[in-house]
Image (cartoon, rainbow, N blue to C red):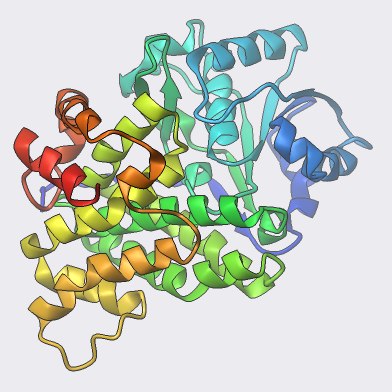
Length: 384
């Protein structure tokens, strides 16, 4: 373990069914007068934005920005900032999944500073605080509502990460009832994303007592509730459990690091336009099979936390089963984990491996098992 760990969280986190009803109180506390609600068209069609605007409309003026795509781009943030400045907004409410939440955080930072978001790529490059922001997730996946990171796609289709304490929410409202409208495929992909966060935060070489504790608890919750939420979106207990898991998973990797799952997964988004959650889901079992020998005790714990049938097995044998356990969970939600099933030619694999090593060494360095170019190719090939 590295000797220095950073543990961050929003100033205030409220969690529970109907917690959004305290929204006006929080806007008033943050001295907001003119609100910009940031969301997307899918959330709008689901009626979730209207729920929020009905709450705030009697006490505050507001504008709404909807034009956000999956895997949001830098240009989308620029458009949102321009819209916010034109409307004289002094407080941001982000309502949506990880893409919306990231745009809301980035917009708030730009409004509190003078430069465009591209000037803040990297770690601790944001000089001044953002304007106040309240974040309300409608998925249980990225956990971005409690994190200090934003990931955006630049003009070259590369992922750019921004990390700053000024990206943390002033208030986060996690209301599981806001996640009920997620269709099964979104529940599956966002849930797989949360699982990848929890696992990587837990097994990272930067792991510490805090990341271990919240990461393993997130894995347990996902093992208990993800398939239930996928099978029945109206299962309130499952939605509550997954909302908690998503939050804890983000806190785990935020206090340690991501690793090879994310490093390899980014190539699916880069070259084939896959969603972030599906990309992680495809490669996760293969990475688990590659990694488990590096920390058999932890991977045995993961197998147990996910409900694997490992009773009376030696630690080494239990750890070896974790890839199959994860793959069974992912496949049961209709997500294929064989690359060939997506009509991707085997000849693409070397390019994908090269992209991983060229761009995401910063993640691979914290993976529990070292990975070079040939090994990255072998992991892709093993799940082809």
